[in-house]
Image (cartoon, rainbow, N blue to C red):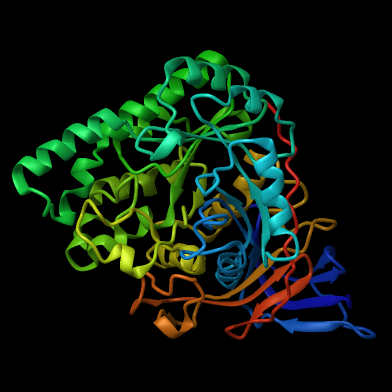
Length: 446
């Protein structure tokens, strides 16, 4: 692999903005300096003042493989992620068969080899009955233990108190939770059926998947983690009331951390009127005051990571009535642009964007040699043109499901170039065809 020089870049990294050149040798960053000469056989990318940042590390995606590949697969969705500036992803276990054993986890890693455009890691899923598998897990085998603490389907719902106690007491790595209280949701669904029958309007979704359902479950997770001194990361927070559970302390001092997703930062419940089931997700997109509380918590440090919860379904599945339409939406191709939109509205800063989408996932999950622009680190980099608008249309979608809640929306920025392990995988609006992804190395233990 020839050396590659990125020149004239505005680097956003480790809380600073600087004008630099970056020299890549093979898969890693060799040198970062104010100016680097392009000598003898070095390929050059002129960033022309564009924003250079580490690639986003998405700690929560559903790429649907194995078993649900009509919706998406590791190849298609990792390519869409790379086109969106996501260079590494951590994928969830609720597939078919479910990733609830170490053997299934190993099979999944084998299936990803030489197929993923972006770097990959996988979660081991918890059930009420697989505590022995969890105890045998070795550091580095999985990014974490995924626990659906309510509101799941099949036997991945962990609702047995003894099972939860054992998981939080004995998990050798981080416990990562989806927190919604199923009995509360079921009661709210019954009330909605009494009022509307089966024709429940989508505007009821944030009331069925209510703030109280979220808080009841997330506060229980925090209590379990505190009692057992477990590492806990709570996914996709959506409510103002939950923010009181989390600390604004530096993340290096925390054993309980929290995530927010781009769609909960971009949309609020007013959009159910025009987007309907296309923004149906669990936990639900809630009100404007909740959205503002999430923004505030990002800025003061209570929310540690920004992710996507990318969860594609076919358009036919989504084109259904409230109870029949599945929850989840495709997001990886436009997540970074969504965050740049928040920057443009002055709701967050560029430095915070990079910290929460790139640095924090690497720190919290112990991702080795990624998440920062540093000499010696893997060259996972993104160049963003913040002044060139980009309109989302069906022909430029790379998702296998071929739809997006952003169709027709014009972002203020464009992903210009994505580099993964030193290889240019996306440039000038096109994938290069390079399958550059590697298995992520996780180093953080309990």
